[in-house]
Length: 503
Image (cartoon, rainbow, N blue to C red; front, side):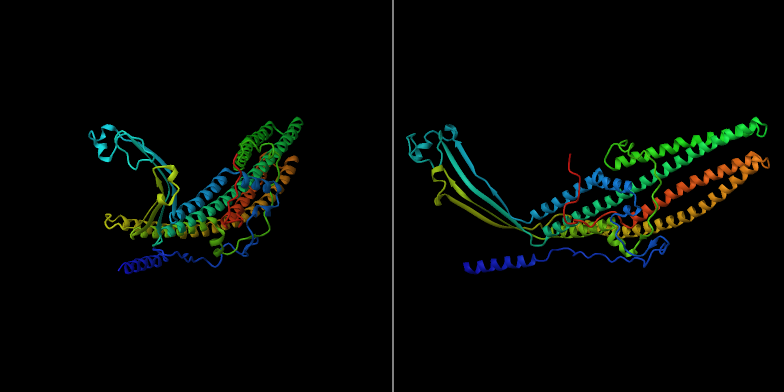
């Protein structure tokens, strides 16, 4: 009969363990996302449908200063360092989740001495046990009133909640997906940081170029003022001409401080992006330089490439996977929990006899905990987890649509700024020709000086607009690289994220 019970219990545990091979809850499958066959903005004279390496796209501008700034920002930016810390935290959460499914073992040695009060029992109680206060060579097995007893114990406690229905395994699955999402969040931060550095750098160079334009214009206008003053001395020009020219000089001079301030603001922004004080790069970037020319070709690739290229899209997909796994975690709460506990040790009233076979003491327990009534909490938790998974899936699909929109928007702006730049350059050539003709005609007295002033204003406006449009074109390229997911490297996705050493 006893053997039959043992067989039945073994069969029951075997069935339980076999059931545990499959975790409850839905298995994850990456959703199918439909994407267009091509972008509307491709082909273009500067764009290619080929998929190239965009991990360090800023090097395609062939500007050593820009390359150095981006590299230093990737090594020293505090937001990027915080993102790397979140990766390490998420990976530790994987360890914590997995630990719940492993046995635990605790050592619990102890030594206890207890003295019994003489007044704890009626008078003469100790005589019932032969107590008389006489000496004894062996330690007491229990204490009488007025005496004490010492107990020494050396043992271990072990417990194991068997993950029969996969709740722990789903927790580990969710934690791993969260860790992978943290990695992609770090990559997304790299993309954003590289784009911000490049954009601020192009803004700086454009502002410095505009400063040079206004300074040159002020110098030229002052030269014209001297010419007009000389003509006035010989009664060829009037005081009105002089006053008008002084207005031109004052107008150009008044615009200069705002443009100079724009340049300083960009220097401050770059300093913070590099993890340094705002003014740290002032001397380094004080010398003006022309904006770097755009690369000859941008490998835009295909829309389907965004599912792999864009870190934010891949982060959203991993977050959906984590939310899906948590449905299984909640579902496992509907099922019983099987726990094995045991303890083994040595117990004695004397240290001299503690380490002996006679001091052995052990126990073992197999328990089942199955909540039968919980007011609907478990079922509600499952429904909550399903809704959270649905929200994560929608966020993933929306991230894909936003990625497509970002690329199309960048392509549209890039094409528009290209066309505007060409028109402005044609306008500048015409304005310069008009200025030359009006100056010649003014010198021989054929036109009023207002014609010269209008031509000067046209040249200055065209030069300023070209500088701003060139900067906008560079920013469009930066936005395009960012929209395509460029700026991260496929290095060490399973290892530690790169981060600046503390301190």
